[in-house]
Image 1 (cartoon, helix red, strand yellow):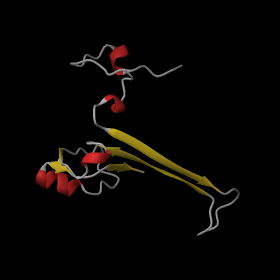
Image 2: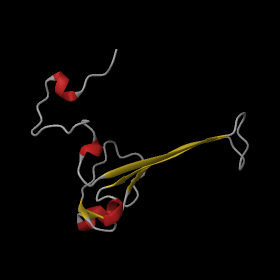
Image 3: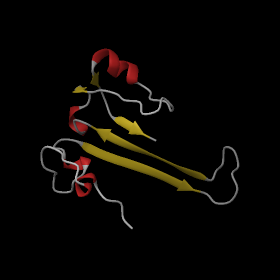
Length: 101
């Protein structure tokens, strides 16, 4: 069974989707990622194995950093660290990439 998308459940959104119905359809926006998977066996501190990664969203693309973009924040449950949200709440904008680990 595959998960249904919101529109398939009858939720109405204004506008139309992009070609791929993805965040990368937004003109000028870039998304990149890096995954590190090295080593095997039991964990040895400082040696591995390693399983980690990061996703970066550049709202204005690579060529326009540090041009600000309007931004807001939301915390669904109050848990987890949201580094840098105080800058967004104070100024209402974001400089630089959004990094998700």
